Amino acid sequence: MTAETLAREAPGAKAPATTKEELVERAKRLSALLAAEAREAEALRRPTDTVIRALEEAEIFKLMAPRVYGGLEFDLDTFFEVGLALSEGDASMAWVANFYIEHVWIFCLFPRAFQEELFASRSYALAPAMLSPTGQVTRVEGGYRLNGRWSWSTGIMHADWVLPAAIVTREDGKRVPMFFALPRSEVRVEDTWFVDGMQATGSNDVLIEDAFIPDGRMLSFPDMIEGNTPGASLHPNPLYRTPMLPTLGLAAAMPALGQARNSVRLFKERLLARKAEGGTRRVGTASYMRLARAEVQVEQIYLLLRHLVEDVMRLRNDATRVDRTRWATQLAHAVDQSKSVIAYVCEAAGASGHFQDSPLGRAARDVNTVGAHIVFDLDARLELHGAALLGEEIPGILV
Image (tube, rainbow, N blue to C red; front, side, top):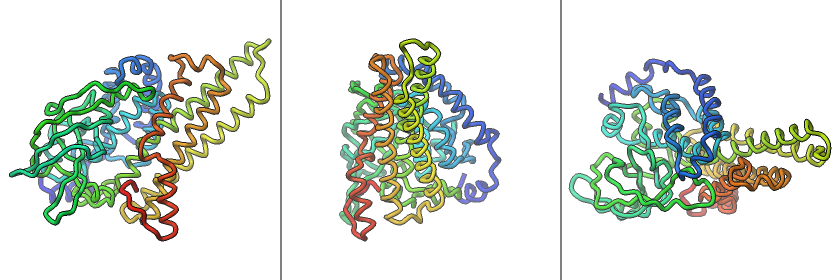
């Protein structure tokens, strides 16, 4: 299939049998499965096979794949509602699911020939994308040789492909970070994921030894940040002209908001149970106030992120630097506020929340870890946005 054929067929591509509303409803139903599997997944230190199979059967991973490859080609608004629904069940497994969806979208930004190869037999591929360019890359005839170790490989435990980043020195001397695509069978996984939160993501280290990456399996970070990739020209849907970083940040922020929502629901259920019991377990007005404040705060975070999604969809790669620094700051703020809500609720929920199988305790552990992601460094995001508002530019790629 040529690029011309794709461009000609995509606008009239057959509408997916699954509607946006149906996919969101499936995600809401799957949320209960993620919650039920959360304790086992935490013990295994990876998503359970049961959850991954259920997500595949529900077509969750097809969400952003182009229709010409059999995908659903839904936009960020559907991604937000689906990812948020899953995140109310479990932060770790929703984190993996959200990034699998987002990484399918990244595959759709690569050159045409690789997309046709990748999607020849299935409309999605499961892959981690290791953002930190820690490997070494050497130019050779017909492609590159890649060596090194990459940490934070979310999704590696059920992966088909991997997307490690490395810095390429171009002929003009400019150093450009790039994603490289290679099959999971060509890498080695080292079990390093011993952490106090987000245990079920299974984000172990990946080791690559002298792997050959043919030309056409690379994607430039600057192009992704600006929304000007090969896929942006290949697929007419504006989804594929969306800058990478707000999309990545949204995938990472949804588990925090989802667990803040879930924590408020669990707190409410505890208070209702105490009311039903009566006697010495009376619910006091302080608990009413905590519940009400937490509920309002969660709604504010939801509205902030929904507005961000609408703004990104409206502007895409026409966004200014101020727009992009604002989005990055809003995402970091949303995660920071989600952490605060969970801490506030856990503080009032009692000592039972500290048992390892407590969903409230798990939410606190997981979302504190989510907040440590580099894109959610609130001080750094505020500094960049403040400088942008004043017409200054602080060097940095994460906008």
